[in-house]
Structure formats: structure tokens, C-alpha cells
Length: 121
Image (cartoon, rainbow, N blue to C red; front, side, top):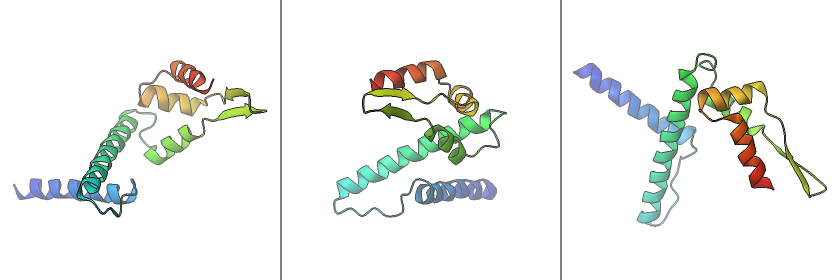
């Protein structure tokens, strides 16, 4: 009984630490209760999404040693290139980017690139 309570406490403390450090949610800085409640709710949703993404990465054997920060940094490298302000193109996906999108997050990389292409045109 005591060990399970301690384990649950540890999970909650780690969640608050991730909320403060990883989600950058250290201070509320609000003057209204409704604003504070909304900000806390959005932080909670961000923590749920972060945990889900991390679980997706850890469930895949090829990326289980990858951190969430590395996976997101890899996806941030996807760029839109514009030439003379009119011609837009996407940089091709690397093997690792395709793997993170497809294997970890279940997103078809071809459909992803097509939807991004439609957004920039």
C-alpha cells in the first residue's frame, strides 16, 4: 500500500517538473482567475500531448533511445524554401524525419508533404 502511494506521488512530481521545465510553465503571471484556469488547462493538455509523443517514440524499437527533444528538433528541420518571394518548395524529408513521422507518430510522410505543399501554395 505505502509503496504504490509513493510511486503515484513520484509520477505526479515528475509531471509537475516536466510542466515547469519542459513545457516552460514556471509562472502563471495572470490577474484573473479565468485566465489562470485557462492557462493551467492548456498546460495540462500540453503535458498530455508531450507524454503521448514520448510514449510513441519509446514504443518504437528504432527510436526508443531517442529523446523527445531530438525527435522534435529533427522535425523542425523541415523547411519551406521561397525563391524571389513567389516560388515555394519544401526541403525533402530525411530518412530519420520519415521514420519519426511514419513509425512513431503514424503519419504517412507522402500525405504529410502533400498537405504542407497545399498549405504554402
